[in-house]
Image (cartoon, rainbow, N blue to C red; front, side, top):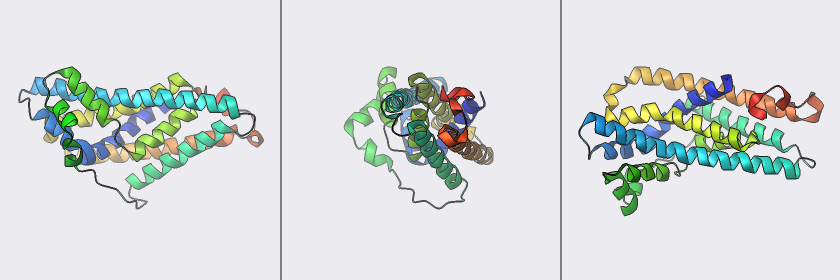
Length: 233
């Protein structure tokens, strides 16, 4: 249960990236609906489209991890490698978000995506199914934190656990993005900063746990971690 809570909290960190990179999409989505309730439904539907993409990717990653473990488990400790890779990526993202590491952050301008007639039409559409598809497309945009959680999903070696990992991550990004789309003033900037810092610490802790779990899979460190860890089954 602790793992699930930290994954969800880590998704809140993704909200900070979403605001900077894709916040303009949420604002553009709300520009066609002035009524608060109508806009809320559109924002929630759009975010659920992203969650659908993330969770589907998590299921694929979990299945791929299970196949690698089954096909190559006798040659290399695949689950140990996947867990340690996920841990390293999570640690990097968490420390970078806390300002302890300097990284290059490429800026994704809204115009680069809004210039696409298909994507722009999905955002302007009055049909919720089109808005949902717009969220699905948004979920395909490159993001380092998403890749870190996909590695964590793959390390689970299980299709359902991979799906759950990414679904929880995606749901963690949903509240802030919906609030931004409905009006950024609904969430105080100071509170949001504290929330992001808490989430960053959760990502660091989750990274350490994943690294230790990977070490536990190595033959010289006792019984497999899967025996004592629900995330590894």
